[in-house]
Length: 256
View 1 (spheres, one colour):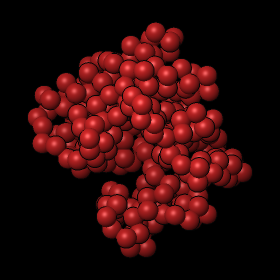
View 2: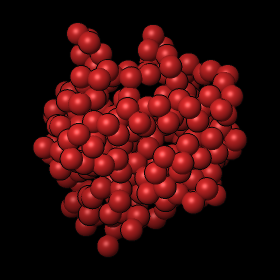
View 3: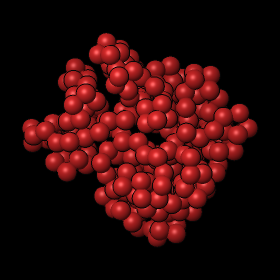
View 4: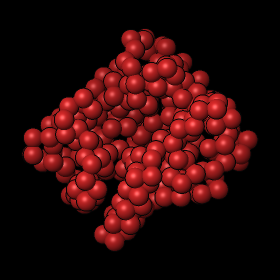
């Protein structure tokens, strides 16, 4: 049987500033990547999101990023491996406190924004992330861009890893995501996006930006739900996957 997880980045509101539609998104996903205060989120939001995830039977994951609230963690930063490890451990520890106090545990870690994209191409950076997770809890799953350096690093340190794919993003020939600044990087047609995802799951293939098939592994699909149209997309993709006989379940169930 085919299995796949649906994950989404949540808990990104900050103080009086509301971002995203977390309450609605959580009705349709199986794993939540929760901001830990560096690129977005705050202690109140972290606690609230953990509680909402539990109510919806959604597994939680830490979503650590660069210390860059103004840039939403999307600006590249030059930092040492020691700093990377400290940043990840700090954020993972913060979310873990809310997980423990609410009677649950952290299923996975997924880097955010620029940290995620840089790690996908930089093995040493990926290794620092993977080591920090392993040193905190070797049972936590490392979620990262399919077939990238973060997957290799996770395996090398002894973590379970999960390959992430994107329903609405175009891919380069090397399996990395096409930059948002390039035309065609975002797939707006829901039907096309869903067909691509089904192909990724069932055939382990995806068509790159040049129209050629490349190898890919899909353990978890990242879906966005920060506007009403996106919510409809989440609903549609889940419905179509089920029709295709694909079981929607959390990461820890997919990679057993």
